[in-house]
Length: 261
Image (cartoon, rainbow, N blue to C red):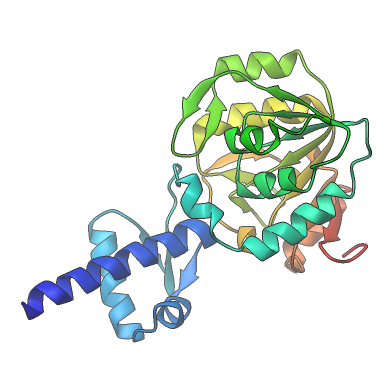
């Protein structure tokens, strides 16, 4: 009985560790120990087991998960206040009558909630954004076609890209899984990258929405370089190296809640 209870507790810890790494990027043993209220030694044993199972990669002092399909519902519950602050700052950039492209992801969904009551055209491949705005009669809503990614509530593929080649937007609000010190915008899922690139080409202004966990975050696939961005809206000061790369490329870094970082 006791061993069975211990096994269940360990499995639950493993789920919580993976959730923390998927939503927040790399984490240290100390951080995970504090979040789960267990000893660092216990966390280290858990990380060894999870690495043996191929579910994460241990790095110096902690671990990282680099996988593409994170369920939308799981990620949506994380850092909501931070995402709302970023969303509010981003929404303030848009004037009535303009067209807005919203990327996939949970921060774009929080931004959509800030657009109610506005007179806008919103274009998206994000099904949660579509559901949020579908009944708002002031918003002209364009849903891009494509293949459905059920777990992440998005549409992808050549149909999505073809749709984007026929459209134009004043603003693109772009999501990311990580921003490298050189300013490169990354994604964990290769299938999303062509759609994001097509969104960039279809837009006049490109605004990256990135909370502090996205510096450096995760991702093996490069979406674009800093030269493709006009602005980054974030909720915390960006590290020195990344900020220098962004500013050298002419990217404005805006801190949510303030006029400018």
